[in-house]
Amino acid sequence: MKKRIGSYPRVGVEGGGRGVVSQAGAVLLVETIRKSGLDAAISAASEPWRKPRAVHDPGKILLDVALAVAAGGDCLADVAMLRAEPGVFGPVASDPTVSRLIDTLASGGKRTLTAIRAARAEARDRVWKLAGEAAPDAGGHVIVDIDGVMVLAHSEKQDATATWKKTFGHHPLMAFVDHGPGGSGEPVAGLLRPGNAGSNTASDHIHATQLALAQLPKKHRRGQQTLIRTDSGGGTHEFVAWLAQRGRWLSYSVGMTITDAIHRAVSTVPPSAWTPAVEPGGEVRDGAWVAEVDGDCLKSWPKGMRLIVRKERPHPGAQLRITDADGMRLTCFATNTADVPIASLELRHRQRARAEDRIRSARATGLRNLPLHDTAQNQIWLEIVQIALDLLAWMPMLALTGETRRWEPRRLRLRLFSAAAQLVTTGRRKHLKFAVHWPWTDVITDAVTRLAALPNPG
Image 1: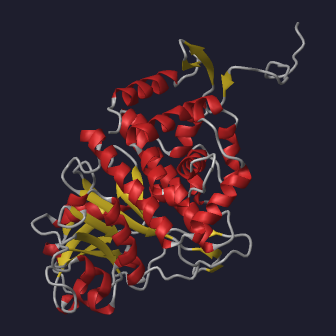
Image 2 (image 1 turned 90 degrees about the horizontal axis):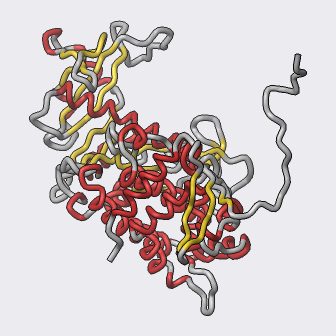
Image 3 (image 1 turned 30 degrees about the vertical axis):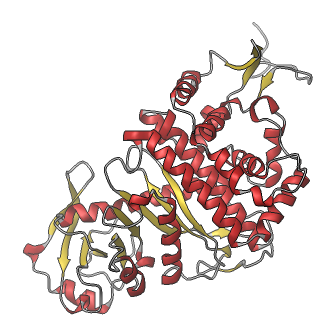
């Protein structure tokens, strides 16, 4: 009988290996940058901050940090993982150079943010055109979800304050374009706010919406084809009036707080007016009904606003609220979309829950904490996080198909980006050879082939 030495084989470890590239799967993100033209756009945008005789392009430094964040990094120093692989990522600046650039960009204030955002918008327009039927506006409309994110701070950082959730940190307001059930989503606005910023501050929602619209192709910056979707934090008179303003004509679907007036209106709805709620497949949602209410509760709101209420049996163990009635959980939202059945409108608003998936992805991509001290520096970090999330959304849109297009950042890193490869130079060209036995090698090589087939910028 052979003596056991453990469940795993014993392998000796030593340094000195050559020709092997770690994180080689991140070449997918590099190719996405190249095909989207983001490198040229960011480089041109950051030119005013390039010092004379500088060795490193500020735009390249910014993209390197974003690549590191997309690959799983959560601080500026994690750019070292790219610096170790110049054959794939090119020359990467030192840590002091990266830190100095962040300080320089932060000192530029609004001018810096405007330049970076304009470069992202330019690249986004190109990516959506390249994506064709896979683009989020392929159906002729765009959905933008706005929601707040709690970012905890474990040290005294500028504008870190106590939050309404009894925590300590910041409360950014984010906006994401929804890619629908067949994809993920991409960020189009990130407004850094103190921890005590209100959830229903209308001016912040208006500012975040303006930033989001500026990121969309021009044809989607006004008109009914663009839907702004929020939770009850967006259900304020000022914000809804701004969305419906003449000449802007945006569609909206915003959550509403159940007030006494709404509660009284719901109590007058006859039983025959309640319609069964539906699921995405069209089947009836068990124990849920929707109805449209009217009356005095709509008098002070913009013309054309519809108020739709859902009542549903609470889940086992759920606590009823004071606004609930007859043992049913009540929720409501407002919309200006006409000529659509209320069950379909309620389903569309309920699918705003996908914004929580986008927030989870953002937390896993550099937004778990804000690593810098000053607010201006952390706003630059928030822009870097958005660039990383852009890349993590654009790459699947352009290069992946089927189920793989819905993979979230953690799964992309584990299965694709973490794959190692052998770097071989033949005919003055470099090639990455991925292991045949890696389960997702075919996914990587097929994705690279699709990216290579796309036209180059310009």
